[in-house]
Length: 106
Image (cartoon, rainbow, N blue to C red; front, side, top):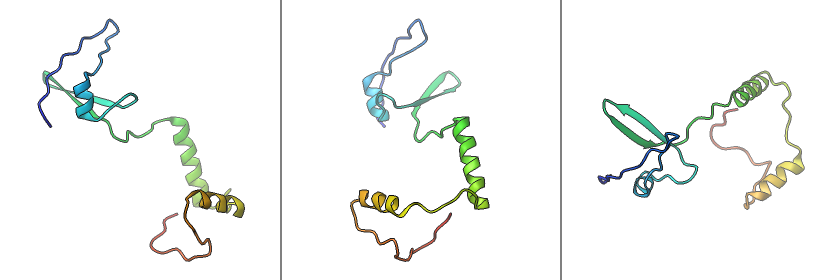
C-alpha cells in the first residue's frame, strides 16, 4: 500500500472525517467500518470486513432455531409452491426430484 499522509481535524464532539485518499486506499465508503488500534504512540486504521453481528435478540433466536433443528421440532418442508417460486427466482432450471451430489450438512 502506498504511503499517504493526510491530516484530519477533530471536532468538538471528538469526531474526524477520514480524508478521501485514506478512504479510497482502505476501500471504504459511507456506511463502511474501520477499526482503530493504538500501538504505543501510533494509531493503525484498518477496514473492517464482515464484522460479526452481536445483536443478543438474533443470537437468542439462532440458538432457539438450532435447538429445534437438532431435536426435529417445529421443522417442516417448504410448501411445494413456495419452493418452486424460490427456484424460479434463481433464473435457472432446477429439478426438485434430482439427487443431491456432494456432502450436505443440516
